[in-house]
Length: 369
Image (cartoon, rainbow, N blue to C red; front, side, top):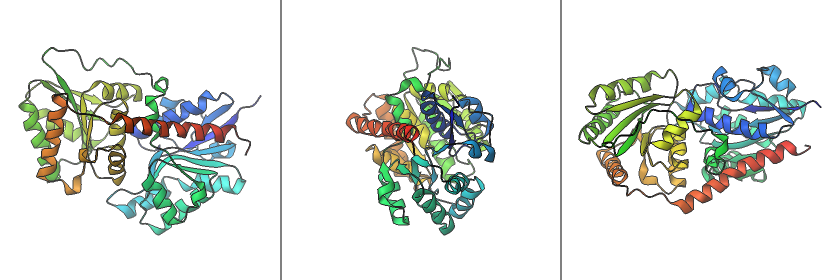
């Protein structure tokens, strides 16, 4: 019997840990339903290698697909800066094409686990509204996304709110095969391993001031081993941070550059805390009970920390003050003294919501429409 083809589309053009992980989790959900064959129309080759999608790609993959899923990610919402550039990139990255073709062919699709809004570019906003209103269902990962889409004219009857797909790993750990990475060797003198992951230019005076403050803190702590992390392949900004911080640390430190989602998950699970500028480094860490502190430039990260009742652990890089840096040091002190607490009742609620993304995906695939 010929397998039905399912096209999975998302933010899969860049070599970025968070987007790779989101696509991987959803591909595993699809592959477990053995009557379906996965295609990823416009995915970067890295995604195909890690996920094992079929060789059919581009528009031909859409032509052969019977159903379409817009997978999780924040690609329906703009960053805090360069919003018009983002609006144009939405089209350049071919996000409208899968929906346009499926509408033309009268084939069904859903949007599953996305973050949405704000969208300043009116043309992009109109296109997102059209994509959503023609979908069988639109599942968003937070209340703010639903509010933005409703405000933009998406039918409320189409919308459901869950949480980020990555949080489902807490109940579905078989999806990620955590590998022995061998990076964090045991040491009696090392009590805490703190991950540092910054995707900003060190030419920015605010970033340099932040890094210098952290270097001073780490150099005063012999019991702390810093793990410098790059979550994106070939990122000049992240490499410059690693080079700069590494050159000034006086105690032992490690460097981890993302290559494999299973190993990256293992690193984030094994360290004692992480300071990060990226949403899915924070979400993955939280999923594995690793405390995270975020200094970011995208409103989607702020939403997540609000969602988990840890707003005091997130600050926008554009508004970073000495008071905020002091709060970061307070966070590090609580971590090193084993006094940092996660709200597990809230976490359980969010994990349960995350697993609903899988339920919606499976129901869509096995339905006849």
